[in-house]
Length: 276
Image (cartoon, rainbow, N blue to C red; front, side):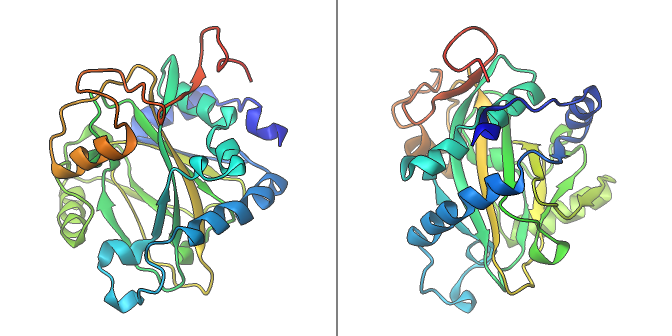
């Protein structure tokens, strides 16, 4: 799949909008053939490792109703690794962060089942013990996602406001953040995703997703990038302590997160990861 390694040319306008809005949806990042190739393997891994298998929707909490979540698929399959390690995506992330390179924090599949519930408002970096705000998630639908299937909604410019940063994803975060963004005039942006669209959002950008009211699962692969020089911060809550142990276990507080689970996926200087 050569497209995975080919440069995507972002425009000046796209880079400016990302800095201002905290998110960017980009068209034609992948073609139908690429998505058609990877979707079956990502789907197989997601359902093979689904820890919610057999748990009826009515017995789950709001978080568990929102999606099936399986992380570090790249360790489980060579094809998943190829998608997660795509230089096309990592180069875009590097450019949007205005960084010299990016490391992998982790990947994860987020499959919203038929009749799956809404995803509450939250900011991802509430969970991550990172010493700076240079983190970005690529949200990669493996098919077109209509509004009825629960695409992402973003709070425009919310990365510049300190709204809900102490709130883990929950019914409480949905209620409190919704009220706060309304009070502060934050515009909620919700759009369907066409086949090949990929969105990028910063770690402190507030986002949510509606329920899946269709008969088909919403199949999404995500890759979370951080600046290649990112250091581990002292965890400030129990979620961050758990993520330290799970995603970068050999890194000590204050060190660059150079764990084997956090390889450099793109660098702008000379080196093995720099070229497309």
